[in-house]
Length: 423
View 1: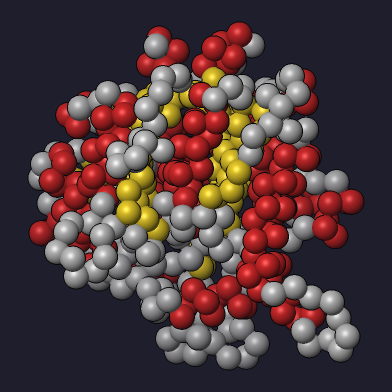
View 2: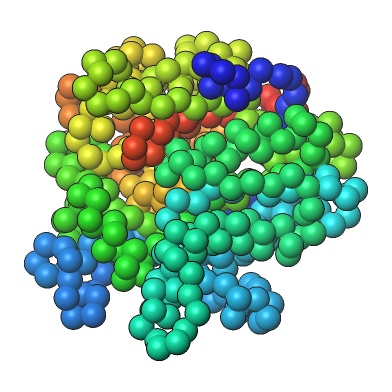
């Protein structure tokens, strides 16, 4: 990353040729996309955990849980004892993405393909099992921190091993923003000589310990009705809903993709990351700056952007800050804004790659997916929030925004497949 700028400084084009999606409202890219355009929600009320709920009314919060995923239908049986739910979801999504791209990394030259993923909470189930071992006399165990570190490495390693990808790989942890950081790092890896990178993120932390940890953050919605639990930019916003899933994307160097006749879905044209200043410093947060730097990296003026996929925290103060950043950059009501994650919950490292997938399909189909459930948008936000149904529009360029708790910010500029192919 260029010092002080938060952007990549070298040339090269990174195109996206395959998508693999696992989301609470749809398994597989097209099933999820249909549900998203139709406003089908994957948010559900959870039963009490162990007889003692943690949410309002003695109940755990509403979550976006994937239903109907049977790992044995998608993965070899030998992998099941070695993996937990989040790794199984990631392996399935990675396989779907490569199949969608029509490529087998094992057919590429040695070290030409790798994996770059983001994960912020997905080790909860694995670590939960490690803690349970503490209760067994004489059991061997590792510390919580060691198990998380081990999990992050193994999750990406499983993807690499399964698909014969021995090239440069990595794991980024930046909470929600890390999902875009993974794509930015994948682009950098392609510019350094790789031909293909499987990039993105998949999360799952809805086991009992994970849910309690979410709730302890103080940012979780305590509304127990799915329709009213997660309402970013709404006057009734009261927090977020956690979900599981995400997306993995096949990113290729443009020349290599053309050489094999690949279908190009779009291009990661710009990327930037920033960090918020310390609280009380009087300096503005870094989201607007991240968006400006990403646009500069792509060589795109704000007026050329056709839609913004918002981070949509669902926490009133954070929604106010994001709306102010969008209005400052594009002007009041200056660009359509949407947050389809209202149908899935916030997926941490898996959420922003899923937004990038939505942006690519929106550009493909010339339609903006809606922000579900928002009935009372905050007037002071002054943003053109797409709600009530999908909106047809002429789309060529999208911006995806992401923030992570603790000060992380990231932005990605996405161009559609036709523009990328022409470039």
